[in-house]
Amino acid sequence: MPMVKDYLENKFKHGIEAGKLQYGVGMETTSADVAEILATSGYDWLFIDGEHGPHTVQTILEAARAIAPYDMTPVVRIPEAGTGIIKQILDSGIQNIIIPKVETGEETENIMYWASYAPRGNRGFGATAVRAGRFGRCADYLDRNVDEICILPQIESVRGMENLEAITKTPGVGAIFLGPIDLAVDMGHGIDIFHPEVAEAMDEMIKRIKALGKPVGTIAVTPEQAKHFADLGVSFLGLGADTAFLTQAADNALATFKKSIEG
Image (cartoon, rainbow, N blue to C red; front, side, top):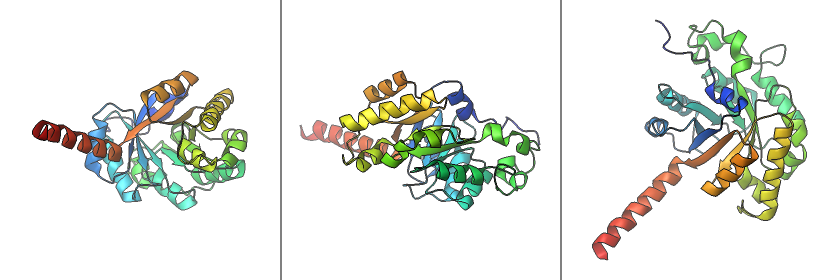
C-alpha cells in the first residue's frame, strides 16, 4: 500500500530549526477524541504530558494516531529519563521527546546515549518492525532518524539553570524546553512565574540558549507573556491545556446561563 505522506518528516523539528514559531496545546487527559478535537484547532504541536497526566505508552500512541491525519505533530513529555521509556516512545513513532528536570550535562549525555543508535548510543534497533518505521514501510528509517528525531531536555531548576550551557551544548540535543512553574517553586517563589526573579531568569536563559545556537521554547499563560517570549525569540510555545479549557468553559457556561435565568 502506498504511503499517503512522509511519516518520517518531523515538521515540528524543522519548524523550530527554521525559526518559525510553533504554537502548541497541552493534553493532560488520555482521550484520543480530545486529541483529535485539539488537532482541528490549528495548533502546530500537541504537548502530550506523560509526566503529570495519567498517560501510558498506549494512550500516547492512541493520541498520536488520532492527530496523524491533521497538520499537527505530537511532542511527548515522559515521566523521567530512562532507556526503556525513551526506546518505547521512539519506537511508537513519536519523534519529539521532552525529558523533565534535566540538571547536568552528564544527565543529558545519558539521555542522548539512550535515544541514539550505535556508535552514538545504545538504542536497540527494532524500528522497522513497529510504528516508528511504519512496520517496515519506511526502509530508510535508520538513515533518517538522526535528522528527524528531536530530544528536548527541560530546564526547570536552579541547578539546571547553572548547568545550562553544558546541557544545551550536549551533541544531538534538538532544543531546550524551559519550565517556569517548577523553576519558580525551586527559587522559593511558589508558583508565581511572574515574580521578578523568575521572569528575569527565564529571559536570561532564553537569550543564552539562543546565543548557543539552539531553539528554545516554554509555556505562556497570558497573551502578553506569549508576546514577550516571542519577541525574545522562542521557537515554540505551549498555550493552554485541555483540562484548563474544559474547566474554564464549564464555569463560564454555567455562570452565563445562571445570570440569564436568575438575574
